[in-house]
Image 1 (spheres, rainbow, N blue to C red):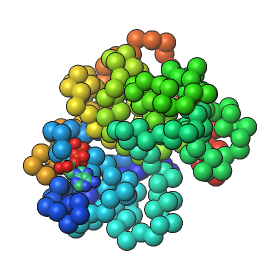
Image 2 (image 1 turned 30 degrees about the vertical axis):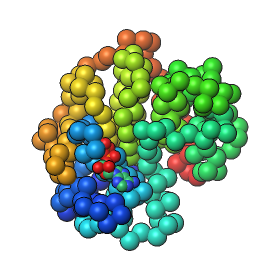
Image 3 (image 1 turned 30 degrees about the horizontal axis):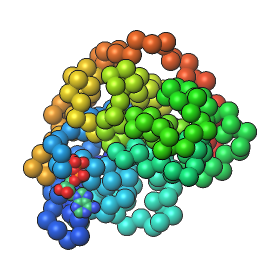
Image 4 (image 1 turned 90 degrees about the vertical axis):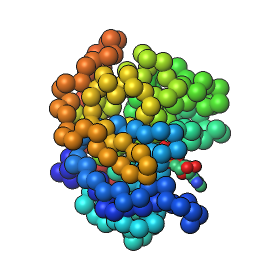
Amino acid sequence: MEEKVSSISLANVAASYDNGSDVLTDVSFNITGGTIYFLTGPSGAGKTTLLRLIYQLHKPRTGQIKIFGKITNNMSRDEITDLRKKMAIVFQEYSLLSHLSVFDNVALPLRVRGMSESKIRALVPKVLDWVGLGKYADEKPLALSGGQQQRVSVARAIIIQPSILLADEPTGNLDDDNASRLMELFIQMNKMFGTTIILATHNKNLIETYKFPVLHIENRHVNFVTKSDTPQTTAKKLWKGPAPKNYFTELSKQFDDIGNI
Ligand code: ADP
């Protein structure tokens, strides 16, 4: 199934803004589907730029980007829209719509995909519960703390069960407990659906604990710090709360329906 073999390939990619000097240069790597990666590098190194390139929000100056084996450089708007249906991005600045409730923010990608309101009403509260925000469904995002808004933006991203999840510092505003809970959620998603996940982070504790392969950006280049994919079973369990093991099983029926839209 295509969902299981998602992959990201960059070949000799360079990126710049407004014809300025390159932020990234000669970047080549190949990510086989179904793995979780950390993306590290000093502030301003180009982590967000790399995620934006993959999500097709920024065009490379040169080089080729392939997603799911397809060259994206000259894709039409419609093709990019189709591609994005299988990808989700969690922005560092959350990018929530302030005039919509938390529920409606999280429901938005489902509505865009044409899911029925009855299914949306069944699915959204479950995802909000899992990120610990069940009580906040009717609130507007700005009534929430930064960490809570961050979890809303994660809920909005994972609710479409993307094949590729790109997350820019998704735990940046979270305490350790919530950070490990989110990691647990990402790992479950990866195990159950083979989601390829790239997590940009500065959090050394997460990197040391979860031992996922690391893509590191320095001096405009991207290097694999860990050469081979570390089996995910080596990941230590940090989350000590109730086991969320049925979460995705419970949701998979609705997710199947999303796949059929
Ligand atoms: P990181 O996510 O690692 O902090 P970024 O990708 O945000 O790094 O930024 C990489 C470089 O690109 C920085 O020098 C930043 O100033 C520059 N940059 C990022 N976004 C823009 C933009 N929209 N216009 C011009 N320069 C930008």
